Image (cartoon, rainbow, N blue to C red; front, top):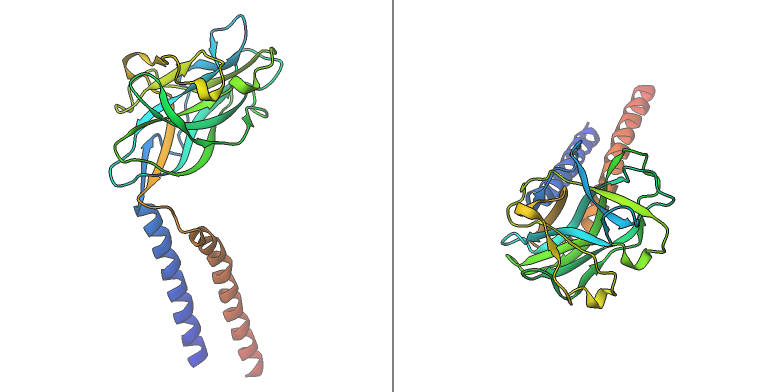
Amino acid sequence: MKTTILHHRFIAAATAFLAAAIATRAADTVALGFPLDYTTSSALFPGLGEDPEVDLVPRLGQTFVVPAGHPYLTTFSFWLGDSPVFQPQAATFNAVLMAFGSDRPSGEPLYQGPVTSTAGLQHGEVRRFDFNVGVSLNSLARYVVFLNAAPYLDGVPSFATFASTGTDVYPNGTLVSSRSTASLDQVSDSPWQIGASGWDVVFRAEFRSVPEPSSLPLLCVAGIPMLIGLWSYRKCCRLISKQIR
């Protein structure tokens, strides 16, 4: 009887602890842009890549302002599709985070993501691409995350489309692009094109007040099987107890 009560209390305490950890994590997250489960049938324009017959750019992204009190950018997402016409190869790029002035990036890259491509996208499919940034920024300062296809252009047509609403959904930022294929240390040498009327791409940025403890995700992941194991152990003890009686 005492063992059963202890099991109940332990499971209840472990469950409450995990729930509190997850709730704390969610409460400290501030998101800009669109929900993670957003789906779209909006026009997919402009395009990223290269094709002599299509108006494409090698660098395209979204500016944003860091929320007050939540300067730690955890993740940034874009919704991308394949080209409206079939191309010989998928678009290849990496995500870059930089400060952004009045009309161009400034300073050094603060984050450079892994090489990514649209390979595997079905024709007409739009998919969310997530980038785990993990960088502390300055509150209320303006930055840009852009997809950089310039280093991977090889003369073979490639084309990725950005999901876009064609409206000013997010008032503190806008779509920006550059036609320059110069190296990354020269992206600030010339002005970037700014989206008309504050036009935004479909994006999401998640921020926290401080970096997340590295042990928290592991604890949350490990906690679920631990509770399942405790439940199974309790059930087994009941069966053994019945057999003894």
